[in-house]
Length: 286
Ligand code: AMP
Image (cartoon, rainbow, N blue to C red):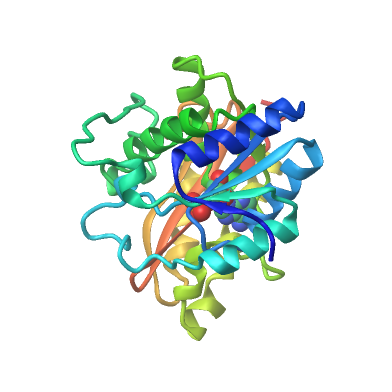
């Protein structure tokens, strides 16, 4: 393996400066590591767009709650570097926590309102941690483009707002969700699922597809669609529903009727493993 792995801000800055001196644009693929083909698809997309491609690997402590899985989140840097290289990245930036949050760190960024629903209430402070680390990595790497997955649709929307509100000179590139053959959205957390949970997990995507199909067939009662989603999920063995909702694609607030772009979104726990997924609802005739 020959891809460089750096961990300190002066190293990333000089690598990026060299790339710019060669005339390359700079692309950033932010991740928490434990890379899978969903991450690789973002890297391949960045590669295809050209320039110098940096993969950020950092399990960000500020986006985990006190009882969440920060300590046991998978850390697989050697594999991540190999996957990054194969997918076409030029460099992996994997800073230690003290490099990102040195002693005395005090500033957090809060995007108002967009975190009031879905993952916000069950993960207090989560999106502030995401916004803070995204702003910091944009300052460290100074990318022209940054690639984010639609699998984390609320996160993507909040990052787009952050970039707009703080005039960050970065193009945010949304990328489609990559799924296993049976429909389960790829996630670093899927590896926590035991065989039974893994066998039941594709029902999440099937439930989303059913709601999408009902919306496409003309159902406009978003409340009913949300309830149908919750019912379907409640029937999945071992699944504990955190939320199942139809929300406005712009505000991420629940909607009663489909009369504009909307998203059906879910968070479900299998044991201690929390999975999220979502699907766009077509409202072309609305
Ligand atoms: P994570 O490492 O889970 O924080 O994810 C890093 C980036 O990869 C985020 O922008 C995610 O939305 C994206 N991502 C994670 N899983 C997938 C997937 N299955 N398909 C596409 N993008 C993904």
